[in-house]
Amino acid sequence: MGLFGFGKSGKGDEEHPPVNEAEIVPIALATLLLDTALVNGILEAVVQQKILGYLEQKLGCTRAQAAHFLQGADGALQNPDHFYDCVKILKDNFDPAGRLKILEMVWGVVQADAFSDPEEVAIIRRISGLLLISEQECETVRMQVQEQNRRRQF
Image (tube, rainbow, N blue to C red):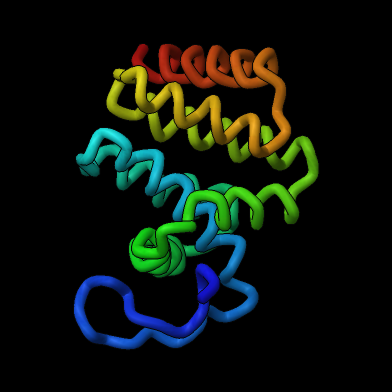
């Protein structure tokens, strides 16, 4: 079964219909951001708000649509292949500049709580490699996000 096919959500016996074709990329993005946020096992409210904000801003959608994509992402996490499926969908649907924007969002989610643990950094390095982003570009994006966060604090 594919990431967005029919099947059980893993949260009970309820069946979920397939996702609308137009929602595949937004839900893949939401899934990747949510999965990254959950690396340490906790989804803090500030991180969830950051994800919703990114989805609204970057996808040009409403808060309700962003919440819908995040709900779809929660269901997609039940698929054992979700990580690679999502990265492939995103890699195939974005050009290099778009993939850098995705990496910027991932770094933003990880740094939303002002702390990046080694597991989070390792997953970002893996994501960047799968998105065909060099280590140098990945580090540049990390520093840009860190600088943006510093400026917002003052």
